[in-house]
Image: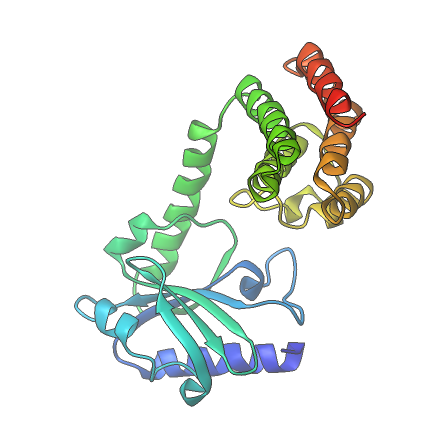
Length: 261
């Protein structure tokens, strides 16, 4: 979906919500919110519908309020409040329907209120503050992150060597996620505001072009190569962190080399 079509969809969704008496508000999320970055040809529509009391479940079950409802190819309930919709042209919607009180279940960072018929902006601002506090309160310490990262690499290459390629690769994907968390925490970057506190692998290539590019290329290769790249990048980018496990990294590197001589 090109930029003009994307904006036209957003405008039509907002118009329909404004005309629907069940809507209390509409909130754009992620790239749809156009905060820090704009949507592109690959962006989906992420949003919250805020319903007046008694109407949230009806809106979750109906599809007629969506633009181009006749072109929907797939729609399913993902969570108690959330749904995914795929159109015949491949465009994706990810949205949740809440009443004002149910917004307490949501975690948010980037958002823009498109429609507010009462209390939505204030409640979203409150949820954003609460989310930031919750993420800070529940964030694991560096020793835990490094330990989990390194043992995921170790288990991943071991399972790969055993012939469990799928399981091994999944462990390495988790190691990539943990590495990106540590990178965002300890390596400043001019464009760091583009990172996503709820999904640490988002836009890493834009914020850290060299490191992100190397990691992305390694993901296209084999599992042992990805493991070596993770160890190398961690040594280069994170060895200044007090909790960096030098002896552990050396042990895992030696184990990796012994497996693949």
